[in-house]
Length: 107
Image 1 (tube, rainbow, N blue to C red):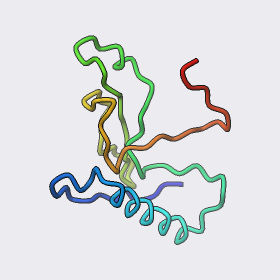
Image 2: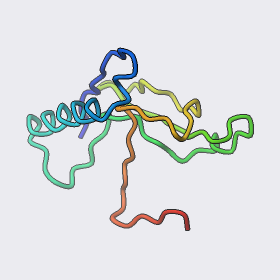
Image 3: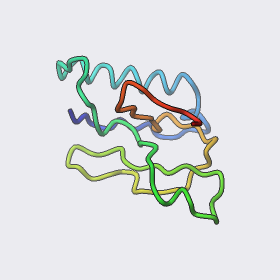
Image 4: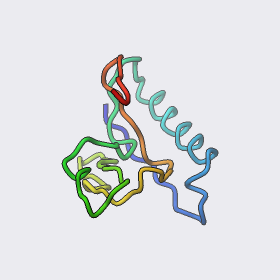
């Protein structure tokens, strides 16, 4: 299910605060209600995904994470594949999409 990406204009560091995450989530939830989404629907386009990529091995960018996505309804990605964010960076548009019910972390 594709949903329209919702963007917030950055004002200072507002887009890094919990209330902005909550506002973004509420907007996404409203889109899901309007689309009559069902539990279990795979939803795309609403966040920049943290992804697995060979760019993570870039020795010139240690401590970075690779991000891609936030797709417009026409399929065009707002965020090209990039390792420009530190792994500690926080922003309302970043998301983790867990595909399996079981996830193994750190071995």
